Length: 164
Figure 1 (cartoon, rainbow, N blue to C red):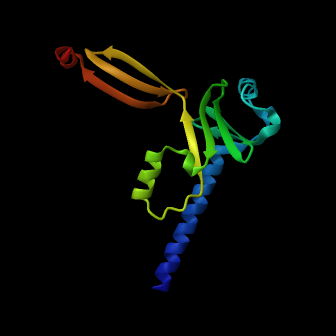
Figure 2 (cartoon, helix red, strand yellow):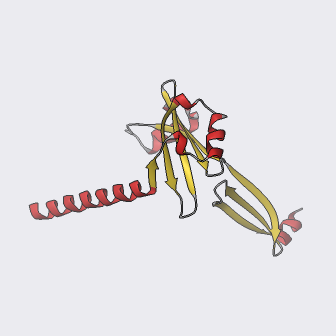
């Protein structure tokens, strides 16, 4: 039995080590001067350089990188995520639990009694909703600034026209 527990513990440690190694390969800490110029300009429109805590370059794919710039504003941390061309794609802001809507707090208490909250972040992703038609059907597509499709739905136009 002790042997089995040791094997399980060893497996968990190895998985953790490989996961940490994988994560470190996908992101690197860099300086403000190493950011592409469009990212520097976009950031300077939002905050002061001396507020920066850290800057991380995240490789989304071989040809796409994103840059997460974390700043300190008062006691809270805010992170801005930009694409290489300086497009702001996401804002993450630390907030207090009581700052989220009451309905969300109520559901958290009901579904997760005893939850010990460590951190709460408000995340604002920037995306676009495109409505159109394709092959005789209404199409609604949500796409992020990074080009990721978030939602795709198709409705039969003829069914919708009948309802009108």
